[in-house]
Amino acid sequence: MTGICDTTKGIDMKNGISPAFFLGTLLTALVAMPIGVSAADSTPVFHEVDVVLGAAGQAAAQVDPSSEQNTSLKYAASLQVTKDLLLRFGAEWQSFWFPAPRASEAPPTLQQANAIVGFDYQVAEQWLMRAELQPGMYGDLSRLDGRCFDAPFLLGFVYLIDADLQWFFGLRVDLKSHYPVFPAAGVRWKFADLWTLNLMLPAPRLEYDVNSKLQTYFGAGIVAGTYVVGEHYGDDRGLPQLNHATLDYTELRLGPGLSWKARPNLTLEAEVGYVVHRSWDFFDQDINPTSNPVPYLQLAIHAHF
Image (cartoon, rainbow, N blue to C red; front, side, top):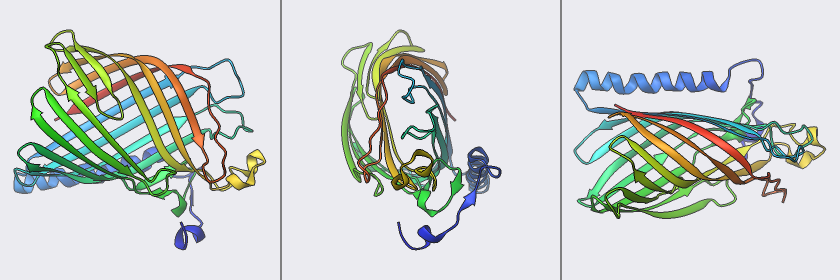
C-alpha cells in the first residue's frame, strides 16, 4: 500500500489499547445497532456467537515455533429486511501465539480484529447467496497503522437440491495475499440416515449422528490468513527486509471430534488431532519457515438466537 498508509506513524498499543478492547468496543456498537432497529421497527434480528479456544503441543525440535495457542471470538447479527434478504453485521477477533525463539523467522503472534458487513440473499427458489466484507486490522497489532489494514471479501452460493443434498460454490478475495483470488467448491450429502458427508471449506468432515443431540466426526481444518508484521520485526532477527513484511499463514489440521447440541440454539464441540502442516510464507522475500507436525486440542461454543 502507498500514500497515507506508508506515512502514518500509527498507534502504539504496547502500553495502550489492547486488541480485546478494540473488539469489545466494536462489538458494543454493532450489538446496540440491531437491537435498536428491532425495537423501533419490529424487524426480526438473528444473532450468532462463536467462541473457539485451541492449543497445539510442543514438538521435539526446539528451534521451531511448534507450540501454539489460538483464540477466536465472533459475533454476527442478521436483520430480516425482506423475505429474501438478510443484512449481516458483526465483529471478529482471532489470535495465534507461537513461543518461537526471538531469532526465529516465524512471528510470536498473529492477530486480526475486523468488522463483518454483508448480506444473505435468496436468488431463486433453490439458490442462496452470501456476500461478506471483513475490513479490519491484520498483523501482530502491537501498533495500528495503515499497513495492517485489509478487507478480505467472501462470496458464496448454495444450490439446494433437496434436504439431503446441497452444493456450495464460492471464492475468497484478498488483494494482499500471494493468492488474491481463492475459489472453492463443496457438497453436503446426507447419504444415509446417520451419515453425512460435509465437504465444505474450511472444515470438511464426515459426520455420524449418535443420537439427536450427539454427533461424532472426522475431518480436516484449514486456517489461513494474510498479515503484516511490525516495523522492527526484521531488525530483531537480522533480516531487515522483513520489516513491515506481508505473510500468508497456513495451517492444516486432521482429527476426530464430538459435537453436542446442549440446547436447540447451543452447540458444544471438542476435537483432537494433528496439525500436519503450518507455514509462515513471506512470499515477497522468498522466506517460508514451517513447523513440525504437532498434536492439538480445540474447544468451541456455537450459539444462535
